[in-house]
Amino acid sequence: MQLYEKQSIKIYNSLTGTKETFKPINEGHVGMYVCGPTVYSNVHLGNVRTFMSFDVIFRYLKHLGYKVRYVRNITDAGHLENDADVGEDRIAKKARLEQIEPMEVVQRYTVDFHNILNTFNFLPPSIEPTATGHIIEQIELIKTIIDNGFAYEVNGSVYFDVHKFNETHDYGKLSKRKLEDLIHNTRELDGQSDKKNPQDFALWKRAEPQHIMRWPSPWSDGFPGWHLECTAMSTKYLGEHFDIHGGGMDLKFPHHECEIAQNEAAKGQTPVNYWMHANMLIMNGKKMAKSTGNYILPNEIFTGDNKNITKAFAPSVARFFMLQAHYRSILDFTNDGLLASEKGFYRLMDAINLLKDLKASEKSSLDINTWKQKCYDAMNDDFNSPILIAHLFEAVKYINQIKEGSESLNAEDLATLKSTINAFVFDILGLENETSANETGTDKLSGAVDLLIKLRQEARANKDFALSDKIRDELAEVGIQLKDGKDGTTFSVN
Image (tube, helix red, strand yellow):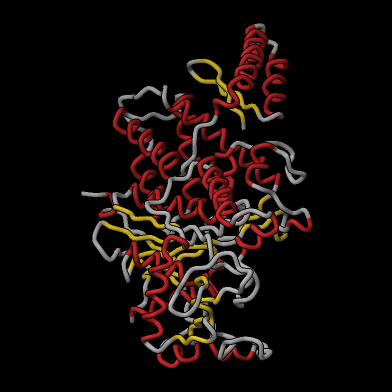
């Protein structure tokens, strides 16, 4: 029996606004599509946070025994500067400014994207398709939408007819927007647009003579609309109806709304059962923005080369920090938050290192199986990583109690504790045991504290309890906790 047969997951579905019990379309198989980056600049931390959320979801589904096909695309064409189908392609603009080929821009920033995600210990997706690699599929999809009466061609460009679609469908059902409100809040066209209505969106754009990125089509030499690529690639690799579609909260409208409309217009059915959206990342209580300096690149976290942080942090510390907030919650990135997470992370790693050497007893005084199910319950409740982490720190307490001799586990329960904590910390949360990076400092600290422990033991032997207490209390003030047990005195860093 696979684990997924014993563990029931509830997922918050953005489409319905409720938590729903997850039931895959095909037993034991999960199809998941996540909107990837537009590769015209270095990947920013908000993107990393979104992809990290779905990395953990991917890891947990695999842990439960599902066979997961995880598709995450690369947008390397068609993403204009804004959502009104005007302006330059972001990649072509970068190429023009730097006087290089567009595919040089794509290559540079795709490599950066992969390097950053590898540093954060992401699992690669099952398939990572590109927009430019699926031009034919996008052209065929446009033909179908035109044939079904939901798109029109003007001067070599093709637009999706939102008003026509809304006569028989519900445009706006994902973002909970009504077309009437969108019409009311939209400025009148200035007469220069080919669209019938401002709410219509491009499926294909005719390329101006200066536009570098272009492909032949039945309508013009041009390029596909941004929304179209995800519809083409998700249905090609996952089918016309699949389980999970994810992305950042900022993509809910118009990108994901348009995806639903395209699928329903072309295929006659809603494409996805569960829509999932990760919330935004802010910094020091404010929106991240290069213009204000309230901004940090992922690599700057590892080097400490940013005015918003006081030191460098290990990748797993930064990952641990981000996973301490639920994926649907806004996360405030702060130096103090990172420092606190660093302490917690190394406390967790210290306990895991200690766990390796714990000895089993004849009887158990702790209910490890109940604790284990609490860990699963946390992840089963819409992948609640903060609650899982709280339960992992319960295990840290257990480990220290067992070491001190105040609690005990038999061999079977000790094995369960070890396997469970390793599965959730390393396999599911994707953390790495980075204590080796601090080995030199840790060794020096251990030597100094061991000397103080020896001096304290001598003071107690000489009945100098005032000095003994002073050593213990002053160490506690700097975060070093002494623990007296039957096997002697040990310490932990809080």
